[in-house]
Length: 380
Image (cartoon, rainbow, N blue to C red; front, side, top):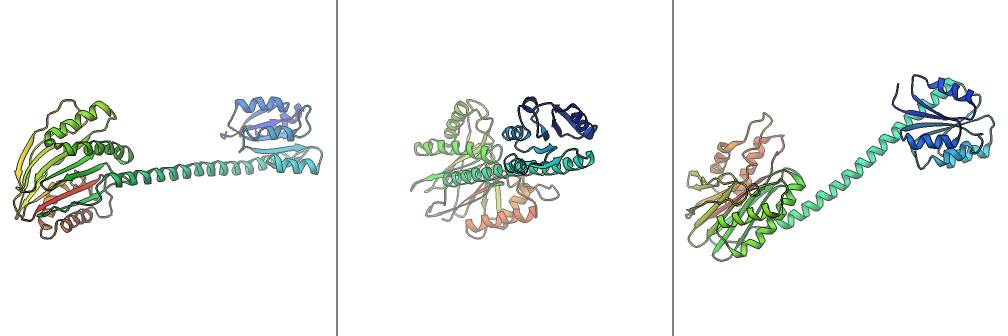
């Protein structure tokens, strides 16, 4: 038995029995002796796909009855039966009641069955088109929301890197989806540079919105110039106290004295930063807990110095966690090899080439996580 339900309405019991026999063992059939009884059945059964009604019934004609079903079951297939051909009634039924067919009594059951089958095909197509239309509207709305989120994120993230005299700085940022969960920010004056890189758990709009909250707090924190460890502690406590969303942020905060090259760095779950000095590359190994997970965490700091010619690389884990078609990770060794191979030109060009190496490794695959690279090179 098929899923659709057929409602037949006729004031003559013999006609109702004949209609029932036409569809027996094929469809679920509901019967009513009058238009008012049929309307009650319709209110109780919103899955009715076909309505077959006699035209000449006491109290309520078939046309009047079908007209009253339009708002309740707008997509139902309507068939009207009559023993008399009335052109005016026929035109009213077709034009005002969305009648699919007008059949004259006595009807031939195979013809009626064929008519119903044909109508149901149209009914299924109408429902499928309506689902498609709603899905298209939903996707258009989502696309618009993503566009707004992208615009917000573009506004939040710095549009360019600062001019720093004897230092050069560059960023490569590539979200895995329309909007990303990675973030970066910096503040600077003639003496100090503050750099933050972050990676929000999750993807797309929820991660981007949580990152926007974090970025807003950073902007209020930068002018106060707390130490990197103090800064991460403040940010962590703020997130815990006010934003219990289930998200967390891995972040690293670095402060650079531009005169001496002295750096202080605190880490909250970001992969260890890297320093390139000549042909050597080393990790700044300082662990830490991501922000937004636990209260009252202390963040250790590590001190190091950028000598002339040194390069500092901060990166989110999207680069080392990237995989190719064989599900092989790009991993830290490949990343380090790429950095050493691409460290002879300006920092901006170097980062572009490092990201190009990653894309070559991925091949036809897609990024499964956001990628952010920040490079800071001391020229002299």
